[in-house]
Image (cartoon, rainbow, N blue to C red; front, side):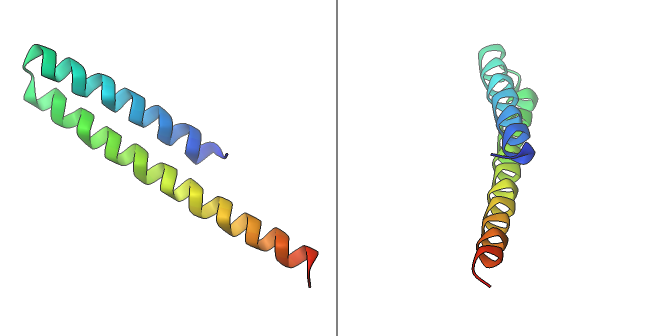
Length: 65
């Protein structure tokens, strides 16, 4: 797990909170903001997955030249 995973998860949580608060209060703008934050969080986690995969590949290449 790297920094992108952690920050992505944080964005997803903030987004979910905003989405729920927006639904409860009827604030469509806040609900949309929450949806967008969750999407951004997913994207950030995907970046973290790619970084982890590249690091793992590089480590394997170092071990098996």
